[in-house]
Length: 321
Image (tube, rainbow, N blue to C red; front, side):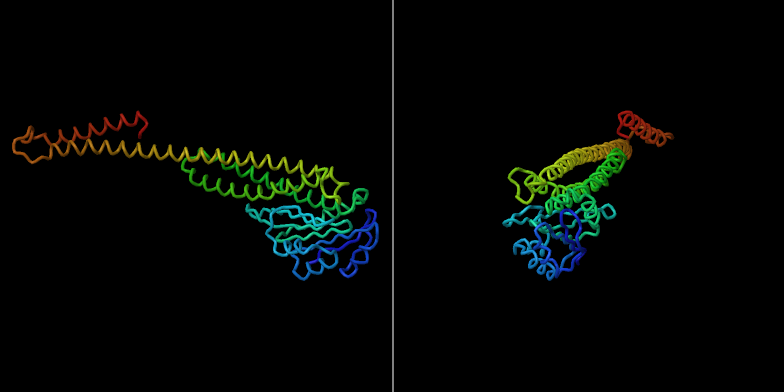
């Protein structure tokens, strides 16, 4: 679906275009065209391929989707893939953005994402002195917007981790905590897979040997790279904390298991003593002490109960009960 198609000249918006008019404005020397698509159909991508003379392999990647974040150069044009992460009821939803960049065009294709990037276009148009840099600045603005959306996700993950940490020592919560920690670890890995390859992309674009089309905007891509470094460091910290929390919870599970074993062993010892005494007095012999005594039965019961009480007190003091 076509979101917008706009021509810019000397950093200023010239006209909103129909697809048929793109080729006319591409011929103008100081002009570039910025097209935004959402969930583009194969027919739309084929049409854009003809208008911008896009490379067949790049178009095929955009058509199939599910690509790793990357930067590919095809002559004087670039093809950039980024992951779009959104939170929906605490769950991470993964989308993609494919960006085609040439010296006189930018084509962005957003897939499986509900959040638009209209604010990026508005921001660029409010800074015409920067928009004069052309498609490279638009690529930077789009990358910066994608990376900025990672920060709220980091905050959400940290908040969720802090909540779990607050319940680590709650009695009987270890199993639920481990399940939540593994779910959180999966979310962190999704973010890691989006950030780590994108760092390579930003590093290439900000380097002295980066693509020629981005030479005038290297400082801006370096800023994106710095943001990604911060996010990556936060991800590593969260991962380490999750690993530690999992080990603590497993230790708590082992401690609780030992406590249960101690209680069972203590009660087993108490009942074993009662059983042993009852077995002795229950032997069916004719000549036994106190067998004919009037209070023999009562004394036997009191002896058994006393033994059980003594054992209970000892186990209680030892912390087994």
